Length: 566
Image 1: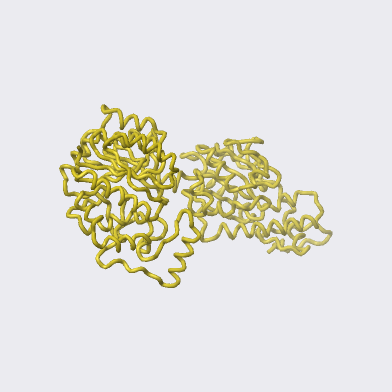
Image 2 (image 1 turned 90 degrees about the vertical axis):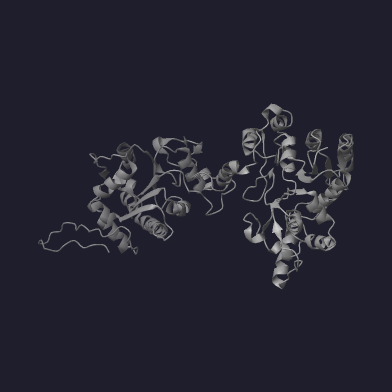
């Protein structure tokens, strides 16, 4: 008979648990199985009758095992007491679950432990040294009471914790122990385990730990420090957890990953991972070489998995981090450009910019009527529609999806105060955004329109108010985009210099001087138009200073200069 005994805690996938139990006993390891009391009696009886035919398998009394409660410790105690009593030759007791899978030949584990007869393998660290606690409770789990289930009675759990904090309640930790924490899955020597189970003060320890939160990660981890002469603070079982404290599940495509770990046992294995069970339980030729277990070899892969889940790729949004504000890894995936006022000030600006830069230049993507995709398209990469109602359901997702789906190609689009303004903060906060704004240029289409002047004045006041609020966002301390802002008056004085700078940033690595300039619209009479708005009670200040051209009159010429709108 082997010198290693196995305690199995089982609550689901009983067929797989039976298969693994027989694998242990085939190498001479006795197994004591605890089946969660929540498992129906009939199901338990079928499982029991199928396993008990093996002379090395025993079943202990059953306990109800809810996550984070005392039942798991009670189950481990009952099974450990039985295996120590029934099999006096064992020197180590290995705690495993029904979802654990031996990765190496069992005899290698037996030999490994036989060469370390007095060493206990149990992860055991003080609360100050534990970095993995999730949920805001580290030292408090030992000083407060937790009579309610965190998973099934969350409201009562939270309220009772809050009440204890308000009242200043603190439980007294037994004087002769220092609380330690670590993985639930341990391998203890007979001397250490029997000392814990037979301690005269065990009733006191049990009463105390029954009200500790998640006692299966602290009971044996704390008491082993009282009796062990040699502790290696690590588990021989490979178990990985995500950023929320939930265990990673291993599937068939993790076969090579598990082999690289050189660990003796891994959990949690998906019950339907037939390839894993076949490879590690039946294929002796595929067994791993004899070497020291080294789960650190695959830690880098798990760290990348956690980072991918929590941070993701730039500009790619996923359930685990969206729509939580500030939890993005890059608001968008690629650089892009937003132009405001250019298509109003220059004729055919969009095709000109496309020729000058080679970028895909759209019209007003957030216009009120429709999405003006380049070339008049009604649908673009990623099945993004030009329907304004669909876009406005989530404008931010629309823009980030557009940039993601067209990565590798620079996107440029027009914007203005008449467009949907919900994306302003995204644009301002996004380091990928290149924003160029000519303030007040929205007045040019009004100037060219044939509308009643009262309607023009009303629309101008509305657009100016909207653009003013937008400019406050673009000039805020939170802005990370590359922002350039000109008034319309200062831009038209020397337009080619800023246009050349913008094109150089968008275009290829070796930019060339522009040989073709965009054609500016005729602004004759625009100054008088602004004066008329002012005469009607509106103050058009975003355009800058425009001279008002005086009409010719039958009076002697004077040296009077045109006056400016201020």
